Amino acid sequence: MRYTKLWVGLVAVMALSFAVLGYFGTQIYQQRPPIPDRVVDARGDVLFTGQDIRDGLNVWQSIGGQEVGTIWGHGAYVAPDWSADWLHKECLFLLNRWSQQRFHQPYDQVTDQEQAELRARLRDEIRTNTYSPATHTITLSDDRAAATAALRRYYAALFGDASAWPAGLQPLADGGLSPPRLREAYALPADTLKTPKRERELAAFFFWAAWACGTQRPGATAAPADAGIAAIPQVTYTNNWPSEPLIGNQPSGAMVVWSVVSFVLLLAGIGALAWYYAILRHRPEPENILPDRDPLLALEPTASMRATLKYFWVVGLLFLVQISMGVLTAHD
Image 1: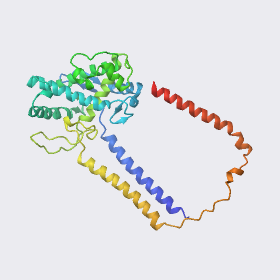
Image 2: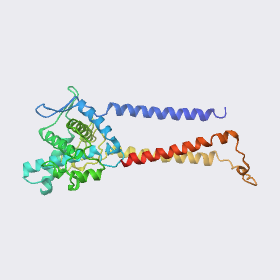
Image 3: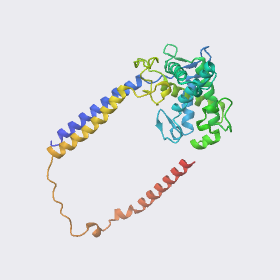
């Protein structure tokens, strides 16, 4: 009976915890970014299908998945986050494309005012949600379709065996590195993807992951406009992750507040627990009486102890083999 209250408390805490997890898990499921049946351009031509995106996920997993980079911030961090990488490169492609069309100069060579104008256009282009729940279709403008085609060629060169970037894609290369140098920096083997089909499917998955990072979640509110720039939708499907200043991806006020509240409550709970046991449940520690000699020195192994000796040797060797295989796998 003395443990009844403790058991009741444990069950209550577990029930409350799983209720909170269940509620927010349901919310995440209901607000998750949709996988469309089709991704089309302004003329209705199909760029990707939903099956391409799902197969692209399988391709991503087959080459190591989160061991060769991250998606939405989850992974081993041994290469870029590919969702953030696609999003940033798509933004750069569009800014340079529009800058050349309007000002006949690269984006980084126009004035600050002209750059601000282009960034405002970029925010509207990337953040506007063009997914139709009725037709399960994402419609891209001609400019975004051109960016998608360019990035397909870029990632085909990176994950293939190209020795140089296709024409027009050099500005997208990180640090101006060639494909072999960039593969070396990312720890990617040459010819990772061996067929155009797998290259297209991986690009479809990367596109969808980046699309979710930059597209406004339905029902999200908008932040007030400032400096003459159109109002920026507050949150994307990934809660404005990753940070991308070019389209105004920054933590929302609600995210900052609840992040602070969460760790304040955690520290307060730990402090309350320590205070409870230090003040209310405090009992003097029993005096420890040490033996005159180490009792283990007089231990006589039993027959069952001696019988397990081989077992522990075998288990120890198996651990060494497992560690060695892990080292070889990580190296390869």
